[in-house]
Length: 99
Picture (cartoon, rainbow, N blue to C red):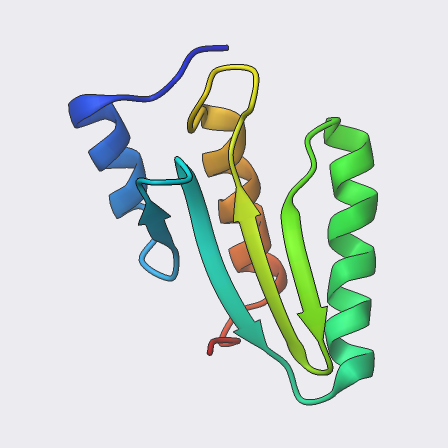
């Protein structure tokens, strides 16, 4: 696993228009607002199960119907393809959900 940098990083970020790159945290971030707490918690449960299977866990926070989620790979000190692939999967899980 290696850190994405330069043109390779930019190309991968462009695949994720719903996410923003936070250069201070070296992380992809997205805010999702669901219809209610149950929908938000259901989303988090599905992501948690996938995170266990992938052995790659997001940083996140939940307040009522809002979920803030971030991906970074601490082992490489930035983004890796694991983060990109997980973020793309999250997009398929929550289509049309935004802030």
